[in-house]
Image 1: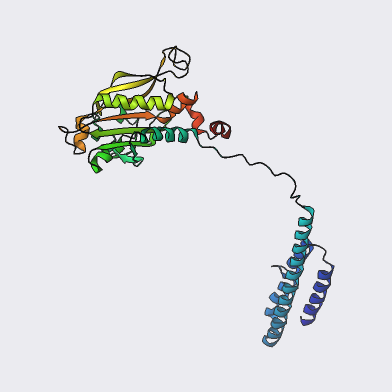
Image 2: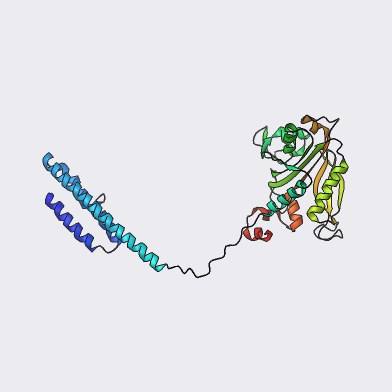
Length: 340
């Protein structure tokens, strides 16, 4: 067995000297040191030897195995270095060649529209407040004076997580959280994502952006609301923009209204954008209902307030003439880069 081991080492050394590539060196490693390799087979045959012979052969075999591993590792490392150097030589970089121009990043149109809305209201003294997207039924409906049988409470309209927890359908819960945590005077806007059980189409999405506004102080009247929103419309759509208010109904405001802005495309003459009416609806608003103020512990004999809410997607679609809301959520870089 000792003689066989010596012959094996001589043969392995000769073949290693003749190896001309990393693949050939790897094949030698498998042939001699693998699970079924020559040295491994010698070690397995030791069980048939006497204890003294087994000890002598074991020491010699382990030494031979270590020597082979060391020589093979050195050989394989030399081949790896050789291949690396050959690769570097074949991949010469011409540092004088013009590089590939990287296109600049682009802000999403919804971020642009949201920041512009925030900028306008910040200029009128409004601060930004935020709230969780997962909220309570109380904050989303009960505290906002929504009747128990209101259609918006149905599971066909609202994503419920449990009987008492849901994905907010509007940013109005921030209004309640603000009334409960701050004392008047209050002037805040609340931008954020909302969720409703809508089937995606050109004008609807189950997820959308909204900006809520709230002002509470002594002596606030409907004229204050109209003045703030008129200034907002002129700042966003141009100084020639005109506004009008139509009576409407919302559970959390009384009186309530929807605000239209004169069509910025045709100036009010009538076109495809405004459906030949000369006006475009952009938001809902009204005086905060006394029941809502009472939930926040506000003295309704002393304080009044107004609130409004608008969809950011709708504002962006109107301002930038986007005809399909789904474009804003498909992350097509060709669409996004139009708003650099």
